[in-house]
Length: 364
Image 1 (tube, rainbow, N blue to C red):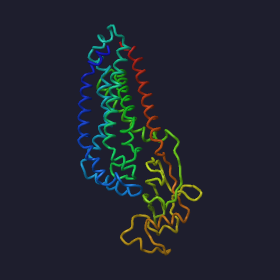
Image 2 (image 1 turned 30 degrees about the vertical axis):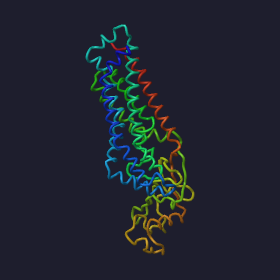
Image 3 (image 1 turned 45 degrees about the vertical axis):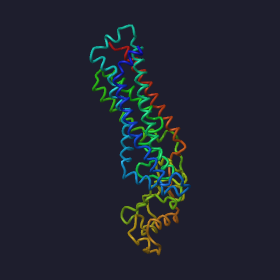
Image 4 (image 1 turned 180 degrees about the horizontal axis):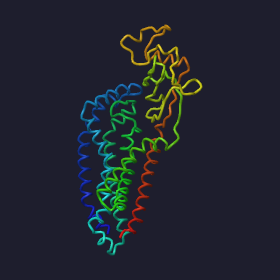
């Protein structure tokens, strides 16, 4: 039965092999030159804070090169691979047998329905997981210079933290869980609906909905977040602004977290000395410009005699006890999140597989 199952799976296996070969050729042909660009920009020998400017220059130059397209293309392939597997490998597995009438022949031989489905699920599921994780590992190898630039502090263009939605879903071990879930979801949808095309549509809808819900509502709560309160003057990358009549409404969002490189910033906002959220600009700071000034604006004097501009505005806020409260997940929790999310998807895949066995016994 195992040999017969592998024979029936040959078309999917050939398609996967061709995809992997093309993916490997693309990354192998461009990877060495990408690494040489990283070395040529001096990042191999830099130390400490001097790496930041070099890393920023390196990642900014990628935005004007074909490597930006290669990165986005390879990322897109990894993101789409589980959905394609669920649609074209999982959904037809049982539904096609029922539609074509071959189920009667397949399930009335010496091989039981349970064994027939078990072999199909093992072959298809393991292949799906192996293919998706292979794509992930190859792209991770190719993007090592970009990852190093992120570690050096760059956040320009494709150089995003490991917690960013695109990077988290295409690196580590989560693609393995996505593939297993998508395949099991397709099989379960086919067993329930008994029609291939509607099963494919349901598979795509559910998988896409979960892929949106997970990073927005589930992943941030996989571990209790850390909180910190920092001086507004330490947030050089933050952009304060004043809105409303007379600039009385204060908006201040952090972009980076001092002392926490690579952390996942969940939320931030200004608070007063008592730790209470603040939404109003202190009266003394209203006349101090909070947005990017025009040339020479930093030298202009306000009615209070202070210079204006973003730096002066932050200083004014700090003098009135305004600080920035930040909620975040530390970078050290990356693999904890990877393992937890993968376990969730694998558990869902096993539950769907169990449903398939139960459903198959009831099908006539």
